[in-house]
Length: 468
Picture 1 (tube, helix red, strand yellow):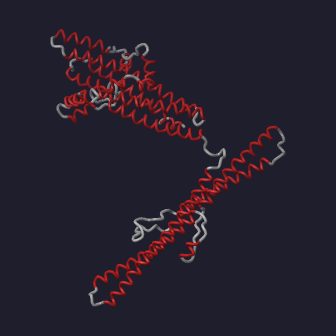
Picture 2 (tube, one colour):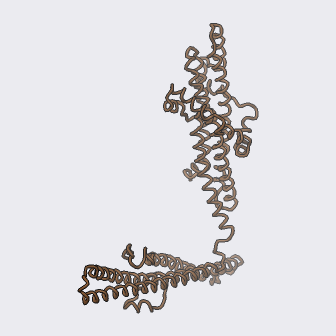
Picture 3 (cartoon, one colour):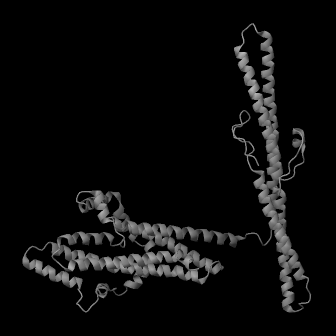
């Protein structure tokens, strides 16, 4: 099909009969092919149902099922066949004059749309030709003097005749639009009546419900990932980072719960298997383990800051010695027979109830009071934003960009800022050998927690397809 005209002056501002008859016919052919396949399957089922050799209870039951399915397929066949008839599976062109095209009997939407466009295109060509002649006559009239009365009359007749031809073209365009509208109405009514046919192959409430659950589960899974990544990315911001990460993390957890509920429904409805549910629940559990790591590392980091700040305020030789003993004791440095990794991991022990509490937090966090506490920290009137800015300026030795670069961290958002404080606090405690061990232990636990939480996020929906 040739492209539709772009310039419809002087008949219209834009194409009054848009559409592609060939594409409509292509859709009609697809519907017709489906109808033919249904017809073939109906013949096969009828042939099976007519077999009497299998004369047993199972055979009779099978024939009854086959007969019932034939009725269902016949109802679907009617719908697809009628839809193909309404749209048309090929474009039939009408030869002859304008009147032949206008008076042709309606057939299907594809052919009638093509017929209307041919009439409209011919009218546009006639209108443009008349418009050119009208303009030429008017320009000649504008150049005549009062003495050229004979030529003036002739030119006025040419101008007026061209104007009448433009009006006639507009009338032809109106006929084309009417043909298209009538074809669209007829096809729409046919499709509407087909949609009203009651048969068991049409989507019922549960089909629509399943589609809705699929959509909600997919969107919730995507949003959980986005908010989860955002939570991991902002925890390094001093003062407000932990609160912001808490809000984003709670939103991520909420959407993860929604996704898990959708997975449970899909398993019940038979749309997903137990493996999908297992991965979803495992993802929540692993996120809980990650929270437990973060909890332990957070306590360690806060205690480390307390001990290091006291060491930093030591002035006399006795105070320095006492601070060194406390730092060594806190670091729990390994003896030569103990591995470094074992030494670092030995420091972190869950308190009674920490594990179960962390797992429960995955479900309770989105509905806990922590929302209010975090939002108070994030309140613009709190002054925390200015304080966060000032701290990063200090970390950058007066340069905010450098301070941001020194503050960025991939550690767990709950303690990322504390870890940076430990690092900066260690600058003035170079004489204490235990400081490096303290900093390393906190970092190891935090990074482990972040990794575990990230795996939990991935298990819900992103890692699962890779194992199919």
